[in-house]
Image (cartoon, rainbow, N blue to C red):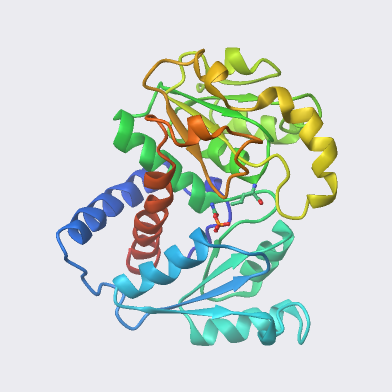
Length: 303
Ligand code: CP
Ligand code: NVA
């Protein structure tokens, strides 16, 4: 029984196995084949924050695999009616996996500590591992084998950036972050990242043009994440020079893909012409959340 709370809970070989299963499941679905490999299995979705992609892709994925899902709202009393340990032990008696989106990463760690079924992180303040798996799967579809290639993230060193950097480290993909000072990765995270993959190039800079040079992908996310709404005006000022627009994309190769985890704040971190442009892959990327999470569920629950 395994918990997937961060990308570093998976080895490179395991990520590749998940991608291989994902590819099979995606191809079969396109052919109209939906094998019930998780028949009778149930996922509970415990969400403390809003979601479109994560919720719908997990619920749909479970149904396509022959299982089912339960979306748990406030009435189950998570964090209110009983202690986390009792909640975790009891829900594990009913379901095969809990997907949890929590305000604080400590919450999913506590849930996993007591759960006797698998826990998957569906986003916390520090991590978004399912997103990063879909991101690299998408880039592999678009650009072939990824080792030695370069991904540029222009924007806040947030949950999405951290998981993406970890996934790049695992798959030996160079990672460059461009962000204003004060919004780059913390030293402790950089140490963990570079210790995990000392052979993989990692840079963080204030120079967005330098970061995107030679990159196969320019990635961005909102400047103020869920829970940071009160910092919005201060962040808008700090990140204004880091907007992903046509002028910045000029510094990247012509076939560089644009990725964004979505939801996007169009006109802020990205302009319409870039997100709707010929090299934007945001819809394919969002679609791959479904396929990769099916790969992850099949791998986790069936081996
Ligand atoms: N990218 C992502 O996780 O989207 P949702 O917040 O809609 O789930
Ligand atoms: N960084 C964003 C990602 C949303 C999918 C947030 O945490 O709000």
